[in-house]
Length: 305
Image 1: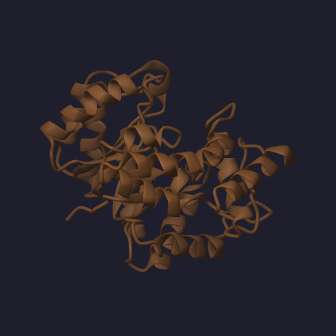
Image 2: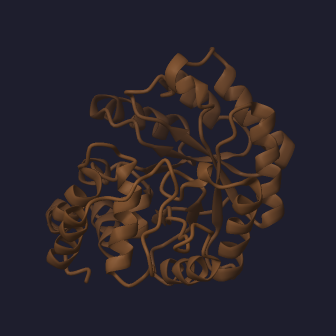
């Protein structure tokens, strides 16, 4: 039985104490807060927004367990599977299953970002992870600007494999989006299609079953409205939510590096009173006081504070 993620699936940040340890008490309360919204269908941990690759194996397992216990079955917890080698990733998926994860979001092997992948290698990665762990899997489509972005035949092959039930698409090339998403939908009508275009949600919202986004960990309320408007084909309502959120989108995601979005999310959550601090781990760095003020003003303008 696969999780039904047709709605908002936030990718929450990982709170840290001021001395850099995982703050499990805050993580638990944060997870409960997100899971309390009608329209939130799951939570994804250990991804980019959650600084998952900055955690030790023990911390990764403990993070999954904390969220699983906190939500107490109200929504599924999905774990990012980020290990470089296929066998390493499969072992990571086994640990995630043991910790209570209901599904896995499979990242491409990181070497592919620079050097590209051999034909068939992504399919082998998904096959081995599922056969080893039994963990239901989400296909992760990386930005077109990277060499780890899968061509359409590779996506179709992976979507046809046992255990693959959804795709998180962040291609960030609207020509490819408009061309490839209809084919995925036609060839695999049961595949749950989720956008992860935090900064391009309006364009992608009318073609998807939901959104798997770090943005959802900061602003679940308007994003639930946006998803509902997209499903209703109500452009005016969707545009109104988009415009209301645009200052926040700019303050969080229109920065020099998309990685800075994680820092900005934490600053926003601190401003909303959800996190006690915005501590991040290296190689992330704190943003300026001016940036923090911009984020606070943007949240105020969006009526999120």
